[in-house]
Length: 445
Image 1 (cartoon, helix red, strand yellow):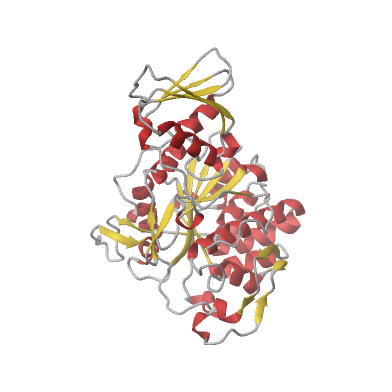
Image 2: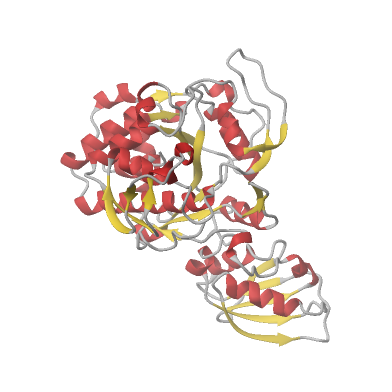
């Protein structure tokens, strides 16, 4: 369902035959908005999992209806250095603004406020869905230009897992038939036992689709299992070696399941694009979830955390707006409080620690009352300073000859969010690297 990321990675090996061109479908780019964000450093790829039950997908179960629906989506940012990538999952139940989208008859819809994110893909009511509308919505949400969009369907997902000989997954508890289909009316037999196991085909699809009966039954927990699944499959393919025996069946299955924007509408174009992934190590492929909170049985975007995250990606910086990502770029930082705001130093240092930074000490400067926060960095610390700036929007950043990293708090730092007390209302839902243990962090949600 969400394995277009894997396809883009394995295509980078270069063993693709031209006959695969006939497998690839493209969507109409006329539906892409004209008023779009400008290009920035790195590349952004929108990956959509379609759960239409039309055609070959009907036999895979999970619901009814021929209209294409977006079951899963994430925005993949490939950093300009070609050595890091971050995939940001956007919960399907997020309430947001869906901008005007093109209908099959050429007309355009009106802007919709507080609509569910996954409804953008259903605009027009066609089996293939509306990738352009989802792309417009993501660009509106993030302020980031989406360079490419890729859609993967159920049948293709199932075939890809067969092609690699199965994928190792993990469950925090036993899962029964009734957990996959809550309309069944009885628990049914156990279909997944607690712990590690290898799945492929329909079983793999069931794994990434199940949400009821695990945690609170929400889509948030399912997102984490989907992230773990993608990471595990990337690891599996790389452990086998990117050779024709393993790659060609996978590439054939994957390209048959893809719908892409015209800019990726041939194997040559896919291959050229995918080469940007070939030097990324497993540890440097990370997965996060957009800052969120529950709003009834739906999901709301948490601000300013989300805008901090989008700004970091736009600036090609580590995604410091998501818990855990700052830890990759973090380090020791000295803090001086020149704000004159009571309690600000405590809130700011708690937030720094929550995001993975080690606070070397806090020095009050009672004789000053600065308005602007200043971040100073020594030789070799520019990347850390950029990540730190993601936590203090509007801060002045400058290099110095002195060693280390420091923050002098101004009054503007009062807008830094307080540390979060519990994960259920967290603005972000943790970070996973592609080489993490497949059993880690799956029980919540």
